[in-house]
Length: 277
Length: 250
Image (tube, rainbow over all chains, first blue to last red; front, side, top):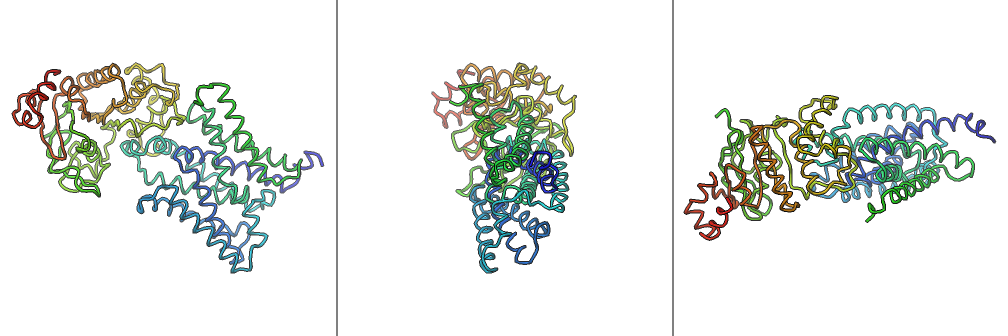
């Protein structure tokens, strides 16, 4: 099969379209999360997504319909993480750990009660970008627009709280609101990304493009753009490499991201060896 | 009083360990340069944070420009430079111009977009503080002195009427520190900006500030440095020799 023939398949077109949209979202949000030391929130929310997907499957809601359960549960859990850090005087990682454990245990119990792990649940664990449906592409495109509009509107506020939350407060920025916006946008992106790379690998899509961009960027804006470019390129290249080598697409996307991070790190070292001391 | 910038009445703040500030009543007039001094843990930073609504006030009240601190929202009138140690993530990828531009967000309504005119304002304040050449540089690549100037530019870019500096020179060498304080004095004199400066260095207050506020959980002294130097109560508190040394530099 040649490349043009491969591209003519509907499932490939859907994977490329949804993949680049979701990768862009995750990469851009990842810059803010990594700099705010909240990188693992993706992992925590992914585990909640696992639990909520188990609920959806128990209710016989499959594919796009499972979002009816996953979206509200994950959005509420993301706010729960924020509230735990504010009210229970826990650090962000502890709050993420609590919500994460809750999500994964709920998922395992529900899967066990429902007759063990089934194929659907496993596809969410490891992701299967090539199985994205037309409805899921439409939902991904809609949510991509919502998230990008909100990110554009709140860009300066997000930058301000990422630089220093206290200074942002004294600039009149409602930091609680902006923090809530950031975790809600992350929750939306995680729910979308679970089909792409799977629950096990979601963090890599949030962290690796941002980590690479941080090696090379000469401004915050450039950092956001570089992260988005890496996210998109890794998904497109990952789908083609997976086609050529018959490897799982999601893991290939993650490995490509890892290689790009290695390249960015080396490039920074070559450009300025002293910066690594 | 129309030109009263800061007022506190019996202000008190508590942490879980107990009260850190009790019964502070002060008034700061427009154009004043107040140096806030006291030993470690005396409540200096707590006081300025309470004024800004960043610490919860447990008793009494404080106002900024006549508005209670907890309801204050005219942030474009205030410039704030917090303690340096809490500020910098060395890998933060923003440039000096991007970071200073954040100081203008207090002037903006949602969505807070920066215009070409705002960028000219950023350039102007960088020029004024002598760091225009660093505009495109990443903030993690600046020296300690350059970082402090950049943060001062951020605090000044919105043309504030009140500038609050919390131990701004702790990480600087003596020469850079003195240059920084001269700059703040010029801003106070030339622009008429009211300054509240938290510092351990009584000598700096003597040289630059118009008033001294000395705290040790309670207000021990609030007045001019000359009054401090001639106060027998202060001589009793510090010992005559220490008081003489502090005032000698003045």
